[in-house]
Length: 235
Picture 1 (spheres, helix red, strand yellow):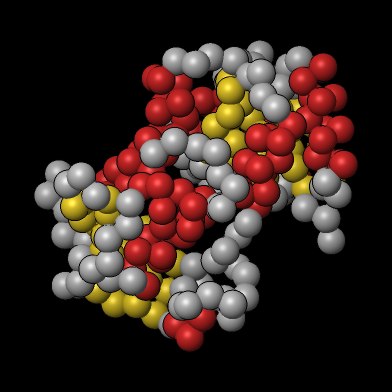
Picture 2: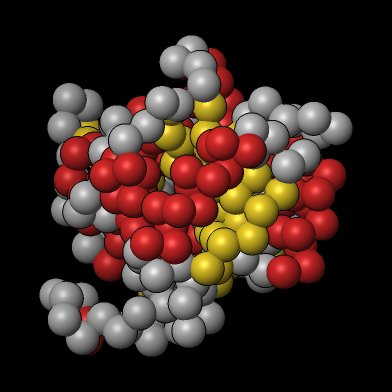
């Protein structure tokens, strides 16, 4: 069954361009033209990916993203006409998985879409080095990572993670004490064809620490090797 993408933009020509390129790759699309409509369609029609413009009538894209993250973990690709750093970081901090800036090339667009549709936690892991651990439970300190149920607990408390956050903590936890550069994590967790920058990794790590760590400023689990990258501490 074809993956379904929700396109949210108030500019019809942008929606038309996105629809054309997505359908050309065999994806189904549904469209919304304002924030309120986007909320309704995202919750009721359960798309596999949401392409969400920042500047929308009735409810802006940041608000939509924040509200959606209270109930769903569907990958969100923010679409913005601005190059301002604050917009990119804010979108990621609110729970977006990725962002792309207008104007965009069809090649870059599809690379990002494919990377965000590549749900590695749901796919057969038999072709990667960690396949033998698929379906297992990783326990580290008071954290429990249930790969089979895509669930992380701290003690008895279930931690609400986005799909991308789960993929990142799972990837690091499966290879504890191994240090990965930001560029390597972009390739291995976000997708080989990912065109993003390393700040995406930094923001996702910060969000994970806020959710998983007792003291995010003094983490126990997701550690930084200064000048190199990140690793999961083997406690």
